[in-house]
Image (tube, rainbow, N blue to C red; front, top):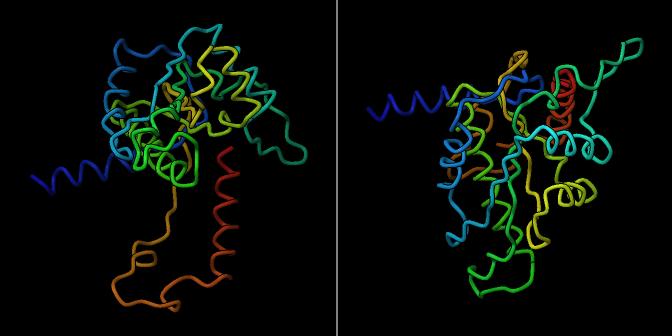
Length: 232
């Protein structure tokens, strides 16, 4: 049974991909709650659970957020010389039926060691890890339901966040960690290539010779850049 569960988890994480083309089809009743039910079980620093989940379904609210993102945090486009610029509404995050915005409630920091009342590097580090865990759980839950998701990190840019705050009305004590676009895929993503397990796993006594050189890191960064741009 443990091997079967491991194989299922491995299949799930391989299935979880970032999609950028969505159908406008509505989602089944209850699936948003199912996804958030998984995410709320994520680990957090001192179990403070510093998150709130904001599900955006109303078209007028979603459209207002899209306009804010287009102004302050537009998606990356990979337009080559001579290419026709696609219409803004064709096959993009704008067509997805749901956005889930993950909010950080910084007031919860009072439950951390020392009961801090102000942000400091320790608070930021702990909550960065906590929120990342919840956000990953959101994506895995979506994949388990056969849904596509996109990580729209630019929603947390200060200008975009403030405009979204004005649209939604969430308080100043909360900030946007990230936004997940949710729906059905309109097109599959390109195959994903990873560094090999043998290349990135290290045991016990190891030294600089067991890790990549600066030149290798640079060369691989160019490779991943090219792959990422081909996805946009």
